[in-house]
Image 1 (cartoon, helix red, strand yellow):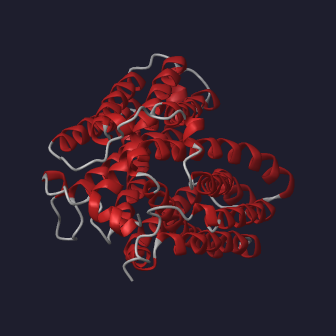
Image 2 (image 1 turned 45 degrees about the horizontal axis):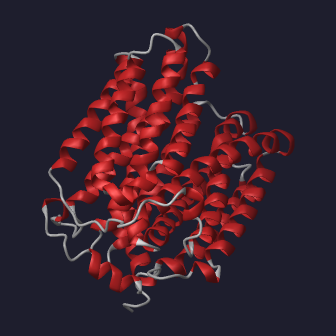
Image 3 (image 1 turned 30 degrees about the vertical axis):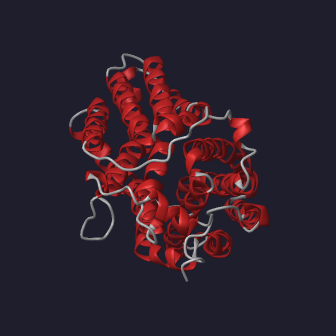
Length: 411
């Protein structure tokens, strides 16, 4: 069954509150899911800017406080690998509500932390919740997407990362400055509870699995998953490896003020968000055709950083294009993975999240010595090579499975 047929089948039962369309032609639930992403992103990205204040308050060091961020990533990868598979039996909507409730509790624990150890525990639990919530969000986005508007729907949901980066992180820093760093976690917890309330008023059709959820290694046997997960790993390792050390290069390599790091994050976020305006191109051309092009485009941006990274202005332009290209890459990756098997969508998206966070760990760890020994330009060149691997994996014939392309059938 091709994707056009599958989309028509799975979206016929959508005339519920959650699937009611907005003036943009997209279901209201898509914007609720955008908010859910923003909540998770605000927590995962928000600790760094307030870490000095947290360290001072708890009588510890910034590096000790940042172990909480590492614990979050570990919890996310682990739960995505071993718990997300249950989404297919229980349903993405119910699992998302449960995960957000656990996230809210973990954030309250983080806010009440008397020492770093409790903060680390709170963020580990928050990671466990996020490792279930993210696959559930992506599965729900695919389920509520109207036929022919899959890319635009998923693109809107992905702008939650832009909101968390541009607004969430900035407001967190202000809130920590004006009120207290503990207020940041309380505010995010309140938003998580608000998201639960909005989800409870929404209903949409889901294709639930009739058999027990497969274990992670068994899920790798699902036809078409391996090439796309390889592409995901290369894509994310390149991103985290470059993003993790961009700030150091701006400050120590180009002599920019520390505030330039925030400007770069904003420029990247604007690029990522601006790509939403072009998501209809993916719906017209099809995810399978666009995916290798998106990855090659990202690789070209990395080559541009290698050649022109000595100029702060040129680098900011490259960072904007980086956000633009990464949006398309992530969008089509989720589209293709979520379309492989609707009944096992949660399991597959769990693998995607696990690979994402593991690749983030590997990329950050590997690019550190690379950046220190050979410099930013060499790191960007290695990132470009990783994108070549991602593009080849995306174009691999065995990834062309049932229900893979949205519009090639329609055009």
